[in-house]
Image (cartoon, rainbow, N blue to C red; front, side, top):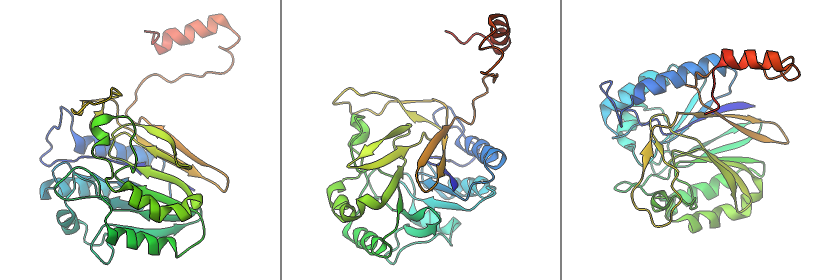
Length: 284
């Protein structure tokens, strides 16, 4: 199975710029890339922050682009989203019995569970008792493999300012998850605007870059200001079989030259030099 992990599109309305970039146009380029290069994907999951300000104009612009995807798309809310505004533009989006935008569906490679970690009035994440009850019931429906999706990470990653706005009740969340942790094949999240891969209490995880702006890599302790930059946008291309979960990060706007790395250049110094002149000198 193959699917796309997309996150933090931060669309705004009016074809305007955000931090010097145009998030609606970047989303359009991502959709074009997914349709052209990964049309065989089973689905796309977008792990929150569809819009930057959660306003109607932004959701209209977001919907225009995201509905062009050639495969099903599963949408989730983040701290920059507004649940009710989102529902007006996506009235058929699944919600649980308490109105949270969380849901589950089955695939050949496991049950997908998408969680709502949004907490109104703060950029930090929450996973309240009602949501934990829902998750507990979902986990009891199957004893098979699981794929988890959420916006906020439930652990610190060393980016001090972002760690302040992670999921705040992470231990309560893990208490629900712990008896089933051995079944979780992978945890996917957004929020951090960085490519990040690792392991949390035995659970492998990955995060993708956003589509408009990124969080700069600053691992100095005690930082309270979130430093941003315009590193290239990216989305994840995920491949699963019975034995493996592989997450590729695709810099879909990269236009650097492509060239053949195998013979003859590997064994012919003259051909190698000609190839490098044609590709351009990227040594610096």
